[in-house]
Structures are given as C-alpha cells and as structure tokens.
Amino acid sequence: MSKKVKEGIPSIIRWSCGNSRHIKSGDRIFMKRDGRGRSAVSRRLRRLWEDPRGIFASGRVITGSFEDEHWDKAAALGITMYVEVELDTLLDPESDDILPRELLKSDKRFSAMHWDSQRSGIQIPDEIATELEKVWADFTTTSRDTPSPEEVADTTGVYEGALRKISVNVYERSRKARRMCIKHYGEHCYVCGFDFFAKYGEIGKGFIHIHHLTPLSEVGEEYKVDPVKDLRPICPNCHAIIHRRQPAYSIEEVRAFLRKTE
Image (tube, rainbow, N blue to C red):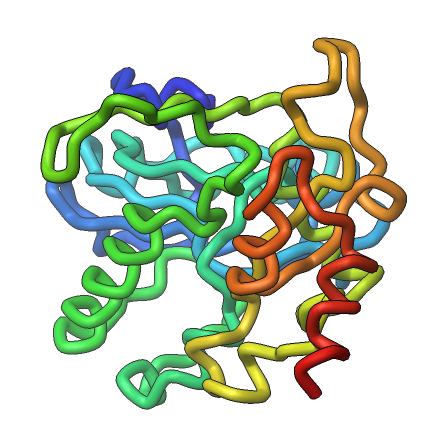
C-alpha cells in the first residue's frame, strides 16, 4: 500500500482509535509507530526495540469514530473504536526513514506534547499541530538520500537553468541497506571522520551520503547489496572528490590526498 500512496493512488484504510469517540470526518490524522504493542505488525517482529519509532503516515478522516469488533479477536477484547482514513502519505518503516520520535521530543515546539503515550486517538493541540504540519511537509518532500554521483545519468548538453530530468538507478537503494550500513560504521565519514551531528547538532543527525564501493553502473539486475561489504558512509565533500575521476578514486586514495595536506 505504501507504493500506491506514493504514486498518488487513493488509499482508504480502517484504523483502530482505541476508545476515542471524538474523531470526526474531515479531521487531520497522523499515525505514530511505537515499535511495541500487540499489533499484527509487531507480532511479526522480534527486534521491537530496534525498530524505528515515530510518525509514518498522515491523512484525512472520511468516516468518524464508530464501533466494531476488536481487531485482535484472539484476545477476546470485545468492541473497539475505528475511523476510516484516506491516506496522503504512508512511509514503510521497513524501507523508509520515518519522522523520528527523538526529533519530536527534542524540538521545543513540541515539548508540551507527550509522544510516548500508548493510547490511540490522542488529540494534538492546534498550535503543536500547525508546527507538526511544517516539519512533516519538509520531512516528506525533501529527499533524505541525495542521489549519489555514480547514480545520476550523464547530463552532457544540458544548459544551466534549463529544466532537466535526472534518472536514478533505484535497485538496491533501499533505506534498510542504508540503516544497516550506518548501524555498522556509524554516521561519521568513513574517509575523513567528519560527523555532522557533532558539528551541527540535532539538525545534522543522520545526514551522511552512502557510497557504493562497486559503482551501480557496473552491477547487474540480480545484484544484491551487502550493507557492510559494499557500502560506506561518506560525507558529501569526500563523496564528490571520489567521483572527480572515472573510474572513481578509491577510499584509500582520497585518504592519501588528505594526509598530504595535513
């Protein structure tokens, strides 16, 4: 369904809102992933505390709160409340970055909101909702992964200022591979050691390019990336230098350039 929503295909879901009876048609909805609980998704996962927690979806209520049988029939919990929501954004926590809970908790604009509640259907105060819309819009419209130089098609003959379309290879550019690479190597540059979080604070957290040791142009359709063997976190500066030449410079070569200038 995430793919359908991203393609702009109308997608309506029924969502459990606990005991909340105040939700009306037309209300704005944000969906938060807690990484724990009794949902069908969390039952399939074993590493609950390692899963990303935060906002992963938004939409507009088309049918307000109504009663129906509880979704967990095995628990024999009787009746619960639901709403029907038309989604405008749906991120897949298994492959997409979601708006992290840590950012919501650390941003002073949201300090009055309790983000760790396990209840569904919690109302967000208007002033906080207004700021959340801004952050959400920026998060979902700004690419979290700037296309790497080796993935951008040749633009020879394109003039500055002209509208152009850039084609990017999408195979194996999964956010899961990105997260696994960063989990292993950290968020600092593998070449020069630069750490955006250490230098810029919260705004720099998680910002780093991911470099493919084997250029994507040289791999086949059946290529399956190994996040530890095939990928490295690289800062934009070092990444640009690596691709100043074809074939690209190696990480060791760029490190040698840096040592010469120290």
